[in-house]
Length: 64
Image 1 (cartoon, helix red, strand yellow):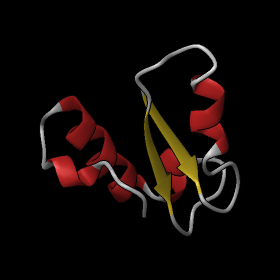
Image 2: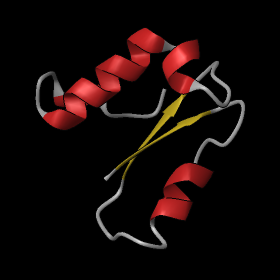
Image 3: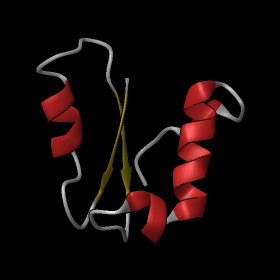
Image 4: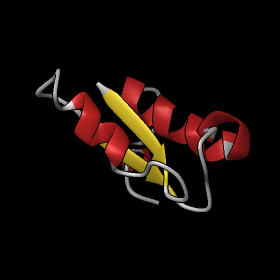
């Protein structure tokens, strides 16, 4: 499961919440981003999602 949070809003809280229901949670926090990560940082959001799904470099799933 992929948890993406914006550093200016929920950050790591997204992953902590998902870990209540799942053991295998990958956390990604996007800097300079608030609540709507896909709208505020679409390029970074897409890099993270693509990396998680296996269509891009694994380094795309990371903090930052």
